Amino acid sequence: MNKKASIIIPCYNTGKTISRTLRAFCMQAVPVDDYEIIVVDDCSTDNTAAEIHNELGAPQIKFLHNSVNSGPALTRNRALDAASGDIVIFSDGDTIPCHDYLQRHLESHERYPEDKYVVIGAAAMPEDLEITPLMYLGNVVQTMNRAEYVSDDPYDWLQFSTLNVSLKRRFLAEMRFNDGRFKRQAAGDTELAGFEDTELAQRLAKKGMKLVHNPAIRAFHYHFRSPQNYINKVREYGKRFAVWISLCDPAEARELNRRMNYQFDREHPFSFANIKECLRRLIVNDLSFPLICGAGKFFESRNEKISLFLYQKLYKYLFLKGYNSK
Image (cartoon, rainbow, N blue to C red; front, top):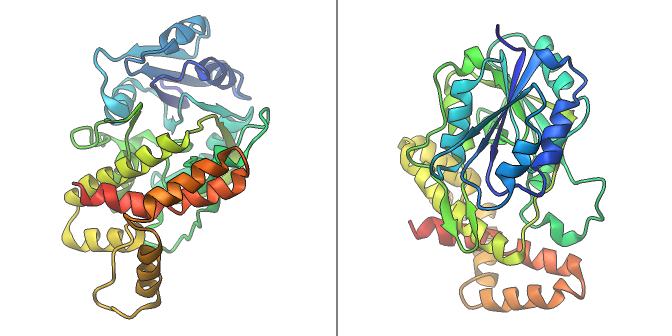
C-alpha cells in the first residue's frame, strides 16, 4: 500500500545533526502510517551511519547505505527508486523540520491537486544557536529567503531546491537526477556538488512544472562553512555550472549565462548591467583577490559583519574562476 509521502534524505558526514533530523521527521503532526523516511548514507567517514542506526526503532525510517561514495544525485535516485509515497519530499541530513512541516506540504498539494504543481518551502537559521554574521557565509538560507517567486517567469524553476521541496511521484515518473554528469567533486577538505537539482528542475519545467511557494513550511539549516570552505565551494559551483551549460541547447545556455553567470551582454555592450560588471571586475580581480581575502580574515575576529561583506564580494569572481577552468 502506498504511503501519502516519502521523505528522501541523502547523507554525507552529517553525524552531528542526523539524529535530530530523523527524530524531528518522526514527530510530525501526521499519522505514522501515512509516510516513510528514506535515509541514504553516501559512505560517510564520520559517525553518520551509527547515528542513523540509533534511530532505526522508528517504523517510518528506511535506511540504505551506498557501497561507494556516489554524490547526492545518485544517492537521491536510489531513494526515489525505493519510494512508495504519492508525494516525494526532498530534505537534507543537516536540516531540522518544524512540527507541521509534513502536514503543510500535504495540505499544499491538496490545494493544488494537479500533477504539475511543485511546492517549495523555506529555510531558516537555527533558533537554538547564537547566529553570528559569518554563519551566513554560503548558507542557502540567504538564497532561499531573498528569492523572488514570479509565477509568470518562464525561468522560475531556478528557485527549485532539494533542501525543502515536494512533488507528486506520478509527475516525476521515471525522471531522475542526472547522476552521470553531476557527481560530487572533492574541493579541499570538503566535498561538494552543485546544480544537479536545478538541472532536474529544468527538465521538469519542460514537462509543465509550476512552482508554489509556501514560506510557512520551515526547515532549520545547520550547515555552516568556514571562509576557506566557502571559497572552495563557490569555485566548485562555477565548475558544476559549466557542466550544466554543456547539457543545454545554445538558447538555454545564453539565457542561463545571462541570469546566473555574470557574462557580458554582447548584444547590448553599453547596458547598465555591463557597466556594473566592468566596475566589479576592476575592483575584484586577480590582483585584489588576495588583499580582499586577507582583509576578510583580519576582520573575522574583529568585526564579523565586515568580514562577511568582504567574502561575499568575492562570489562572482570565484564563480567565474571555476566556470572558466572547465
